[in-house]
Image 1 (cartoon, rainbow, N blue to C red):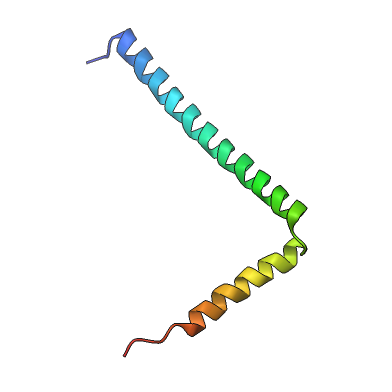
Image 2 (cartoon, one colour):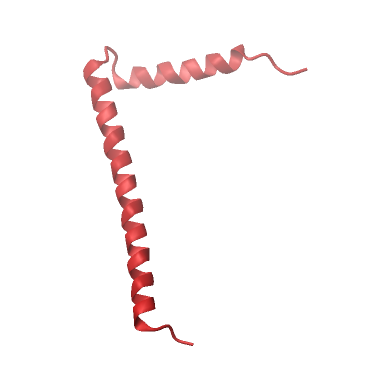
Length: 70
């Protein structure tokens, strides 16, 4: 049976609102990340490439320091 117009319209409206909300959350997350990277670049002494290599090396070193289970 076909849904009444109001129900279909409200379902579409709700879905669009949810999509808009997800889109805005994603956009805010991107903007937040960009702001953090910009701040780190402004206050950091190291270029970004070195910073990435440092964190990669740090995570590798921490994995090596963990004792294997017996």
